[in-house]
Length: 111
Length: 115
Image (tube, rainbow over all chains, first blue to last red; front, side, top):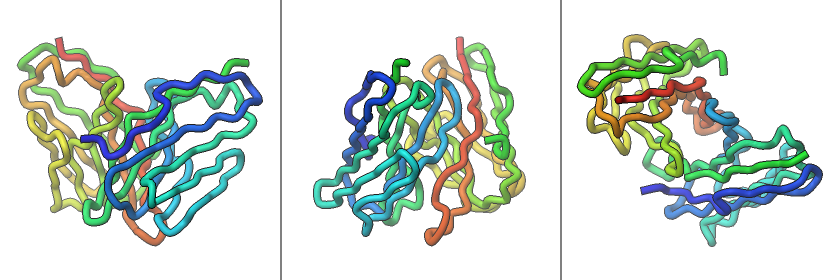
């Protein structure tokens, strides 16, 4: 079964708006990562947040992690048409030694 | 990521055929993975390898086999392809060091269609 589930499944916004995607997971984790996938292409790592961190920033990306709620959010500020992609969270539960991916959020940014 | 190369990019085959998907990497990573992606299901792990002598089953290994020919090469085989193995297949690598890089580097994928 999937460890992570993203919400919403799909999101459409206008350029300049902020996009927020959420990820919920089931077990304890070592870290949580966010990846981006352009249509039909390989995934690209965006940001990693460790279980003892609560917030992390990278450029226009802001990730939060709430381990008590087993959830994370990815905020893309001032979105651009080029941000159109699918976004996946992935977790690294202790003892599993591998990443488990969620089902993804499809983001469409209209010019 | 050009450092992780998958061949072929696309393949159409018939039910019952044996198929091999290949992956090579120039990143020098020990860990390599095979995932499949189906619409609405995200990525699911098929097999993974932490070094040349180490092979591990993932969530959905039935109907698949792998070979780690060298540190840089990890191939996935479908011994007798069936239509529900139609999917987008990804190879990925990582250096697996918890203190630094646990992130994965993905190839561009192989779209496999089994008719």
